[in-house]
Length: 281
Image 1 (cartoon, helix red, strand yellow):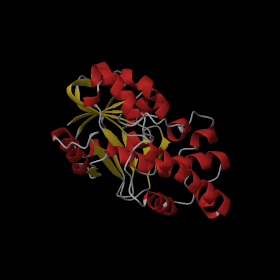
Image 2 (cartoon, rainbow, N blue to C red):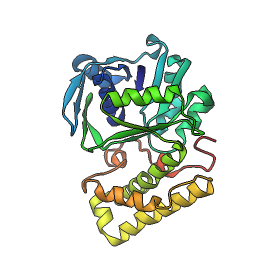
Image 3 (cartoon, rainbow, N blue to C red):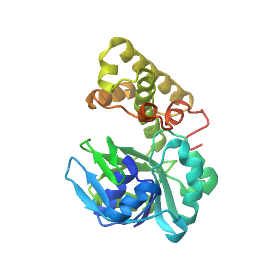
């Protein structure tokens, strides 16, 4: 497949690097120091399954790329409106656009601009960070991608993208209800980021102190209630699944509160400012 990855931070750099390493025709759309690093030295991926270096095409001009089969959007939630103009030149008659970010609002934002039939739901699971521009480290065994059409349809374009990831060594699954999957992840990452932002504490501290543990679980219950009010069908053990996942993560993990600690913009609004009109409707 011809794939354009918009953004080469932790998620975009890791999965874009994996796809390129697996032989897919990948173009990274980036700018600044990250673009220069990829052009000059390639993408360096430190992974629990083995480190590697790969040299995908990289550009800051999406018009130079032409139409692709799939656009994978791996930017911060607050960057989505601006990124839409980056995506437009890449979208041809058969192109699919898949946001790979936390929260549930990006699919609606993309669909409003590009058309509902072009947008799929995507969910990336990894735990990593940018060591330096163009150098990504992932420490989560079993990193994975979930993709799906809103409405649950399974067709050739979904299967092609799944096969591309699987061929690259990334566990990928097609889920019948991608909206539910996005809410399920939000139940986990939203409270983690929110409580982390308030306490400035790593996950191990938050989950081990009864008072902050209750804050975490209370926020999970709130997001579950919003999802159910939205009409989303979630597993009966959604809260237990989210808690169990957070209990397995490294105690030093900081979640998506890094921006607060270093003075950069954060994704907190994407994760805890969700409206009922979002996610595929």
